[in-house]
Length: 283
Ligand SMILES: Nc1ncnc2c1ncn2[C@@H]1O[C@H](COP(=O)(O)OP(=O)(O)O)[C@@H](O)[C@H]1O
Ligand SMILES: [Mg+2]
Image 1 (tube, helix red, strand yellow):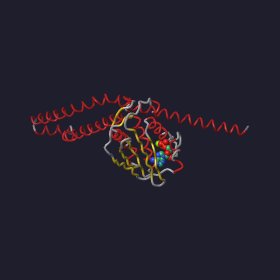
Image 2: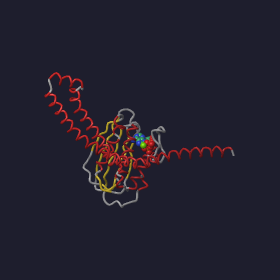
Image 3: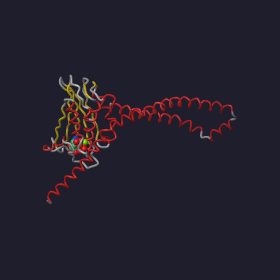
Image 4: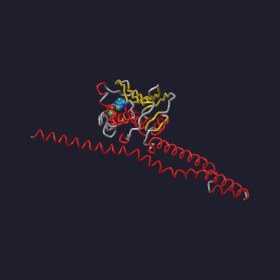
């Protein structure tokens, strides 16, 4: 009787834990939708800030000329005093820098939005033909900050034929693999992304020189909720989700790894006619 109760209590705790993890999973799934929505909303204000900045540049030039010409009509002393009073020389120097920096900042925001849109591709949650390299670039740009303190990313790209896939989902897989690779790198690691193709497959791989994975765990890592990370670092869903996505693409997700040396995850996607699966549930 007592053993039963202990067992029940254990199960109850497990259910609680799984429920909490599932809720986090839900959040993750809606993140793609959220980012696409935010990107869309930001586009409009960014548009007018960008066009205002162009006008501001032009008006500033005109105003500077005007001040210069008016000051030439004034007695030299008076012009000098007025300019000093309003810090004219400093403003004249600083304004172009401020405007240029604002322009750079804005361009960066525009880039991020475009990457977010490429990444989430919510407009087409269907198979389309894409160049995998575009997805790789936008994903790398998005998580640059996560990666750059842990590892250096090297790209070894081949010419690739277009491949039929759901871009948002393939990008999600790449994101998971890159984050895992970065998290496996304790000190400054090297992450290499290779791409290639043959007559049957287009593939990319993410290789790290991090901790590696013991041979007897190589299948387990694909099981949902298997994780060796602290609670706030991972919930053990990345690879399970990734394998599901790649299965639905009729592709292959495989790994080779050696403890102490590193790991290499390869994603192969078939060239040719992949039937149009309904793969909404893989997100
Ligand atoms: N590149 C890697 N190097 C070492 N271990 C890895 C790597 N990728 C995955 N793993 C192992 O597989 C486990 C499951 O990965 P994943 O499904 O992405 O979940 P999470 O990252 O949340 O733990 C990780 O906790 C880790 O033990
Ligand atoms: Mg992970």
